[in-house]
Image (cartoon, rainbow, N blue to C red; front, side):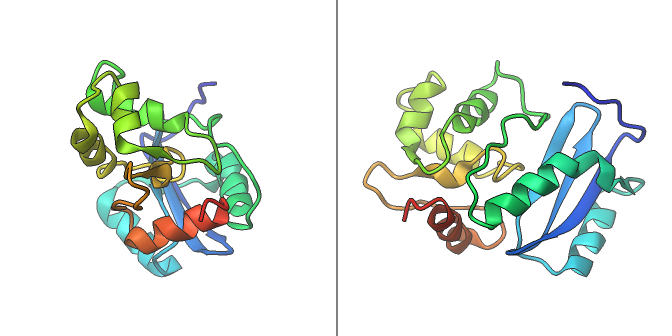
Length: 174
């Protein structure tokens, strides 16, 4: 489903039970999700700084707002209907992002599983590095990727590993 967006870049900021969230999209889809960590005003300042000339357009994010609110209220939700502007699937990062999107709610996979799914069986470290740059946490659920030993691994989104632990607790994995 492709929507026409009247501005090159639009954003929205909304509240969830876990705190304020934000997202940015362009004509191809979602380009960034900011998980609950910042104060509402700080998100507004951050987005204005990072995306000069963009405009707030909450009507463009209705589905994402509803799903993220449900998620942080511990409801089982899927984000796969949200259009995203992901790297090309011809790239390793693009394949990693797409493989990560297939991990079901309430389940985890290892970095080595993810690398294998992206066509690089010996690329667990590269998979971790690609996820470390994931601009779409929650939509590309990198919090569901853990070490093969069962350790949580890292989480580069604001809030770090504690946010990862919180999200896995919401999904009843921990």
